[in-house]
Length: 324
Image (spheres, rainbow, N blue to C red):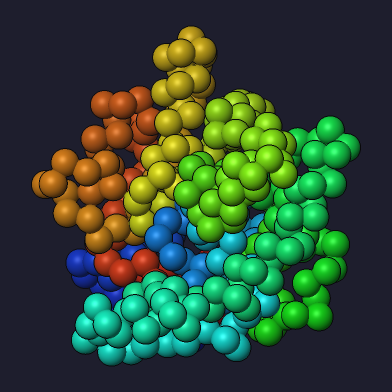
């Protein structure tokens, strides 16, 4: 294949160390798709606030990812950026901020994520009034949905369209909603919208049962995995660490050990972009081979780890897949 500008630059210059691992992982991802395997992408950290949607949305539209696992923060923050982008503030000197400086940001309703401040009123509250109505309507109708399904309903209803402040083609959540892409959101309760939902439950305005749970997410993923690995495999592309990756990768040992499905296949590919130190005992920092001992990866599973900044690496790998 004749490579275009970005991927050609990578092919020419990314020859050693982490840059070579990046290219190897991209080629491995590409090979999985050529073999007809599906791919899961997991999103940790604040990748949505880092505007990963600029490249991820096109990956979704082109069918180069089949299922996503993400934190509740990533689920909501892409939509917040969609409707409140103009009110975000960047703080490039964030390392120099004093506690008083941080408090001043709070008093202005600005919640800081590294160098980027999310505006509470324009982002959280703008979504809250719409999502509450959807939650309440579902409850009144005796319906229950997953967190991402409620977000899809809000996006597809069109109620946010007048508030778009970025080109909607750069919203990965909108691209996912339009394709009804399966999403797993473990630990959704610790997100801003999860906190808001919990507050309505405490006030007696909503019932916790209206929101489908993490256990239901695991069983949904298990059913998906069984169905989609009958003839082909599913690869695992992990951006960062944490629960977004830890939760879904466990579906394989769960099916093998607890459901006694001894023929269930391992994940067919594994790549992690990580900056976690391997010697500190964290799962996020574990080398891929450790996952063999937990029944997640096979001896021959293609395994890659890129020890670098996901905000740099992920868009480059996506550019490779899109042949940009």
